[in-house]
Amino acid sequence: MGGRIPPLNSSPTELTSPLLEGEDLVFVRVEGTALCWALISDLLLARRRIPGSAAMALGLLLSIVAGVLQASSLHISLIWPLDHNGLYHLGQLAGVMALQAGLRDLLRTPTH
Image (cartoon, rainbow, N blue to C red; front, side):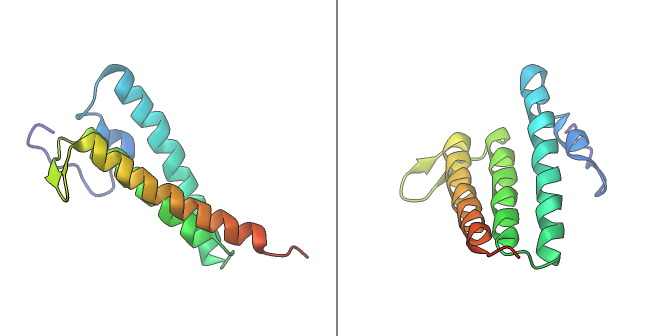
């Protein structure tokens, strides 16, 4: 980011703009905005104690973190070495599992 730390109230677009260019930047802006809106919606539903909404919010947050990991150059070794793409897929796996659990809880809830 050119040595500049963005302020805490920065939008997802302002945070990612220095990292990516071209089509990747467009995708991150659109996907990041959609995920952030969905996360905010689920957090509001979780405050109203709607079944499954907290798990779905966790899934969306994990998906956002996975996207950030993919845009990074992070490499770690657990059982085997993982680059940024491997970390992304592990994060997405956890996110999809949380989304599925939340959706299952939501669909089990009887409507009145």
